[in-house]
Amino acid sequence: MMAVGVVLAQLISNTIWTAQWRSDYETRVADMSFAMANRVTSTVRFFVSLPNAYRHLVLDQLRDMGGTRFFVTLNKEKIQLADVVDSPAKTIVIDAFNKALRQELGEDTPISTVFSLPSDLRVINNHTMLSDLPERWGHQTLMLAPYNAPILVVQFPINKSEWLYVATIIPSLLLEDSISPLSKERVISLLVSLLTVLLIGITGVRYITRPIRRLGQAAERVGRGESVIVPVRGSSEEQLTAQAFNDMQQRIQRYLDDRERLFASISHDLKTPITRLRLRTELLEDDSSREAFSRDLEDLDLMVKGALQSVSDTDIHENQTAVDISRLLQHFAEDAKIAGQSLQLLGDNVSSFSGKPLALKRCIGNLLDNALHYGSTVTVKLTLGEQHLSIEICDDGPGIPEQQISQVFQPYIRVAPSLGHIGGMGLGLSIARNIARAHGGDIELCNLQPKGLKVSLVLPVQGSDW
Image (cartoon, rainbow, N blue to C red; front, side, top):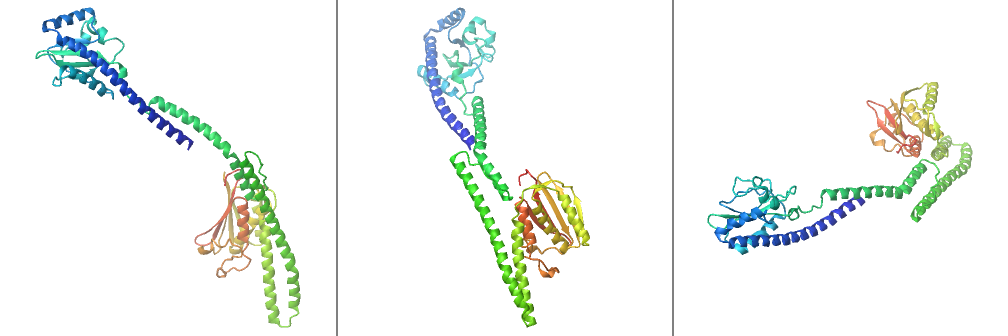
């Protein structure tokens, strides 16, 4: 935005300045042109007033003396000259000369006014170049080397058989091109200004946004379960934001601690009445009623334990350290082999991954338990990249219906009994995903063909942006 503002300001100011300069320039050109036109008119008036017999004598005397401010000849014909000058001020100069000459000669006199250069100028006739004449004739008047200024040539018939030929040097100031808002010098000035503003702007913006980046990094670490205190310093706004962030973090931690204590209290308070109800159930004489009460109490006890497990497995208070993921998976594979199940490990060797050991063990364990529960053969593939670690768990089970994939991560959601497997409280995937997200990662599910399920656990590598 600063760069665009600088460019627009430069363009607008240059446009205004150029318009003013062009107006002043045109005024100066018109004034100088009328002054020169009046001097040429005086010369023309002098030669027109001379008798025919004296005109050539006067011209010869002028040539012998080295010329005058104007190069004047009397020619038998109109000399054809190429107009080689193209300038916005050209029209102003020609109009000034034509106006002055027509006031002297009359409106009906045919007047030819063109611009030429000394190297292309023809004189006396259509075959003689200015450079062919003796040096004293025209050098002092029209060929002031190395000055190669444009020459204005005025021709008009002075009588039926002769044309008066008047040539004079036009100062280059009269024929300069109008200044452009995007001339080379102004483009360079604009680029220098733009570069300076960009350097200062980038440095300033980075300095101003540094507290925001620091706050964002702290929020990312807090989201992974770490405790971070943002230093309260800088401007009043920065201090206010940092203090608010620290207060928010403390309130969230108090909420989590209160929730943990609440569930612990609920667990303690519910165990005693559940135990008393079980004892009273045993005293019932009706077998059907006793069995019904027992089933209800078992379901109630299972639900309480599941809720407590969900809280305890999600709120893991431990520091991050190096975790040997490959060794952890190897332990799971050995346990599966003892249980008569097949668990194959493929991919990279990951011996040092920064994370919470117990949390990662529970997360991966829940995913493997589901895979081994629904499938007979499970394959685990490790892929370590620069930005993230990927753990793909594939089984040959029945998979999950597509309409239920987005729901199985919710607590107490279990796969339909029609798949042939019943059991659990439906908390494993929910706990696993909460742990993955606490590490800055996530879990995705995808059905395989013709059967099976692929679970992708993706975790960010320490120091990468997730």
